[in-house]
Image 1 (cartoon, rainbow over the protein chains, first blue to last red):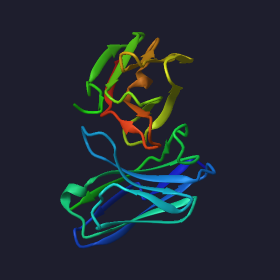
Image 2 (image 1 turned 60 degrees about the vertical axis):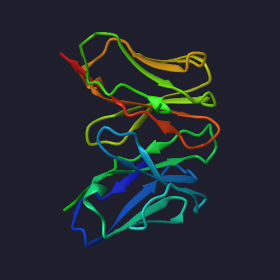
Image 3 (image 1 turned 135 degrees about the horizontal axis):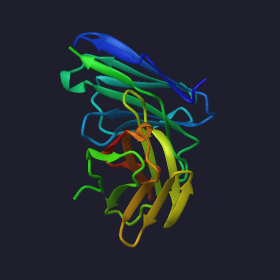
Image 4 (image 1 turned 120 degrees about the horizontal axis):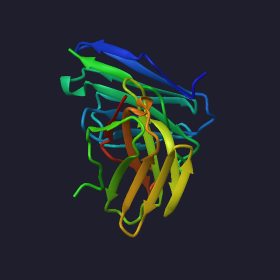
Length: 114
Length: 110
C-alpha cells in the first residue's frame, strides 16, 4: 500500500452534481490536509485536521465540505462547484502538527467542472 | 513581495549536467526547509528535508540553506532524463503549515 492513497484519480462533474473525494493514509499519521493545486500557482491550503479535529479552514467556500471520521481517512464533499474549481486536489498527512513534521502527499484527484 | 519566490522555468539541461534549483524567501522565522519532486500526473514526493542552515546530501542530491541570505538551493549532480519533473520548495517556521513556492519545471534531455 502506498503511503497516501486518493480516489478517484480523475473526476468530471457538472456544476449541479454532488461528489466526494476520498483520502486514506497508511503512515500512522495524526494530521491530514487538503490542498488545491492550480497551474502556475503555489499549493493552496484548504483544510487541516489534527487527531480528527479541524484546526484550519483557509477561507474555503462552503461548496467544499471536509470530513475526517478518523486519523486515517479524510473526505472532501463537493456540491454546486464552479468552473474555477477545476484543479488537482491533493491530500497530505504528517505525523502531527508540529513544525518539524514534513508532509507526505497522495497523487491527487484531477477535478474538471463542466 | 511573495513570501517564497521560485522561478517557474522551464529549466532545460543536457543529461549529465549539474542542476541548481533555487528559492528565496522573506520570512526570517522559517527554520525547516523541504524540497519536493512532482512528476506529471503524480503528487509531490518529499525529496530533501533540512533544518536551519547548512548542507545535506543524499546521493546525487544536495540541499543547501543560507539563512543569512534567505536563500535555499537544491543541486542535482549527473542529471538524468528521469529527473525531469517539477521541483517545489517549501518552508516552515512559526507555524506547522508550510509555505510553498510555485515550483520549477526541469527538463533533462538525452
